[in-house]
Image (cartoon, rainbow, N blue to C red):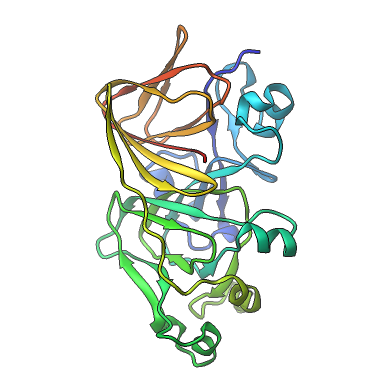
Length: 316
């Protein structure tokens, strides 16, 4: 079985799927977006209807689901289950709705699929851009805050800058604001409970549906757990653990030559502004800036050459 790094061609959510999206995915990151209202580039995705495809090698054109029966555990490193993670790059021309995601227990019992924890790495932000990260109910119940019309004034807002990291475990109330471009790693789930949409209406003049009761059932109003931040020096660069979640880990690698990645686990690697080169056996594969690749678990060794930052996510 010939396993190799899979350079991925993304799928996109755009138009009415992401009315808050813009054109930065094309302008800043070189993505071949379908229109100027494109909010999400699904870099590594096995979600039905939004599957990214392999761009290189003998499996070019195939989806990750196509490769399950071919590579099996050599792809994901897991014995069973669906593809575990989803990687996106987002562009927000307008704020997203205030939302929350359930944990596995609630989602499996009520929706029949896993929950969703996620993390954001800010790639670019307009001056003064903010996001919603948690809520302070001042000791009141969340239902009382909602009933009293106090939700917006209770939201915790953070100004964001390039390189900021936000860990969003299931149950955290959150919303990306306008003018933000971010990398998002998450459980491969599309369950979202919308708590508030800023009073907006769609083209039909009607507001988007809210999911108040579900959101009340899963929201946590305490403090958000701190992110990691341990950095270690390695031959060829350094590695910083940005987020460690029970479902995934997110690392930043700062390259200064050739750096070997850990073997034995599936990894999603995203080149940033300077690109990089993947090296394995007697092969080399260049990644352009902002391209993503899947490193299969069955690849015995791989190194990355370059001089910039790369982002690497993997199952925990």
